[in-house]
Image (cartoon, rainbow over all chains, first blue to last red):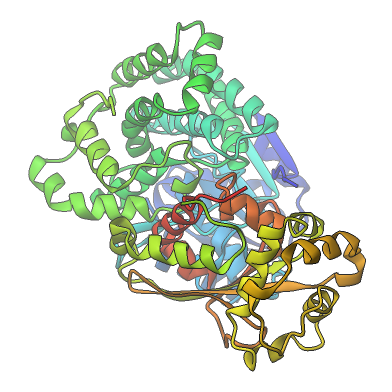
Length: 380
Length: 205
């Protein structure tokens, strides 16, 4: 038995937010962050709602902490919303997904696992959750995981359960029209990573393959154009990110995310930048696994000779969208060496690792970090 | 050397492998917790137990439990299964004196419906990088295990043979996991390494 999980509706287009006009909830919680609020997107959402009471929680920070999810939960418990609208990037959606459960069930957020029977614990899905992504990368609008940072341990944890997937995602192209270039690049690489990891995952299936393949095709053809300001390409990237989310959300990510989560938590870097940095190196590591066949096939669908050319193409794309291609462009050698042991141990403890087609041991993980730091090709 | 699954020998080999693995020691340095595995006898198990060696392995696990503790099996379908093989659950069992060929033939006559609910219990206990116990137990022997993993023999066997990992079996709904799931999610390196070691034990077919 296997399951494909997705929201009930995916609403997309230039005016997709008008879908909110049909919502009948009288108490609504909007979850956002400060910049989204300043950009006027929260007011935009409010303008479509007819609720009697609307509260806004806008304290979500990038790479949100467990504490932030608990703060949002407190607001939700006080308000008892029938609808939660999460508008923002992955961080906002991750907080909203966790708070939606925790407002009803008093458990440690990390106890929300794929194996937890939330209904047995008293979860009744009191609040409907609508996601409105304002970046084109995370796929968090359609996945059943939430990534939260444990500040004490400097590591990312991933509460996950099929019951936390949003009910609706709204892809309104207007909210990505003014996205900063650096975010277009970082989130675009995030989406590409999701699709590639989703297609090589040990949990891959026909549904996830179809979605990931198409997402990769759209991203490879549109990321650079979107970065250069092409509105049509920007809209396509927005769809591709959600498509990749549906794909990897149902087959899971792997080693790239384990490395990226760890690196991001320790060095406080944007998630998309982190996973993008590790993607080509991990693909090189996978060349000596069963995943090579799948990567070769994927490369051929893109008109490339084999997986090695596909990896080269990803490095080229990263340069075109002005992203770093090695860790040494982001952190110093001193801080890298100081953190290497924690980087390796936290990577091995990351929950995504188990779905990788090739799982590195301690020494291999260390060597992957060293190669990614120096920009050396992985040939082991 | 290949060993029979399930058997006391398999449990001993597993313990040996875990306790001699440097990577396990490292990643599990802070791990504190035990699993009670409830392996339910299914149709595939009944087929397997028609092989004298495999049946001998199962009986070796039962025999490894002191007879006074085997009382936990009293009144269960497992006792009924043992009786059908000619074994008294609370009496001395010496596998070397049993005619496994004859007993295996008896298994072939047993209908699954007659022993539905029969199960073997295995206790795997870990503490700070060491496997302290890897042994068969009787129902009720282990109080408050940190985790309970249960499911049919065939689902466990796929893991032991390295065909699939435990997480996937749980996601497929083939195994059920209860317990301190948050703790497990924080310590996936320990769980993953143990799974790798478990599937590294060569199994005699």
